[in-house]
Length: 108
Length: 119
Image (tube, rainbow over all chains, first blue to last red; front, side, top):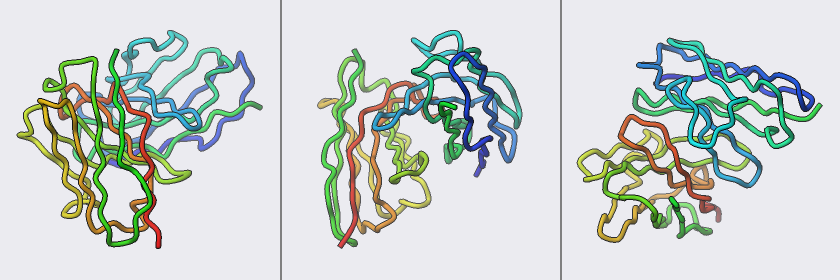
């Protein structure tokens, strides 16, 4: 099973600042099958990024994904008020599909 | 518009059973793999089970294997999760999610249904 470790656990930032979230895998993620999801309180997760760097339908271009192998990054170039949420990475190339434990982006 | 609506959650005693359903609309249901993902209160996401469009591929997390059964009815555009021998650690919000294939990301999620296992 591929274990995904996200860091930091919590990111305290102000609107307009840049957010950099990390996701590290215990072994290489095949074909960059890595996705990022956003989840707000009381809501279902929402797909942001797939294939490590492709934006999902409706994902604003301030969100970008990068990385390969075992190291992946989600960057939010300039935080908007609606971006404060929990973010999860997921690998879907190997079974079982696994998620990271999440990074909470909170208002500083 | 793609819609996934879960139902069937509730309070059940340890050792009991529950059947969750997910009604899908707005897309060609039989062309997609359907999945259940759960989230324990205050915790992260855990993939539970997947069934391919024609039901030829079915997979389970080790934590539920032998206790949970996934099935789908393409005529009714629905996917079910039969949960038996429930444990306290199965308490979670259960989400239905769509993926384009068995090794694909989940592009649409339902709003979830809460299952509470407690005496």
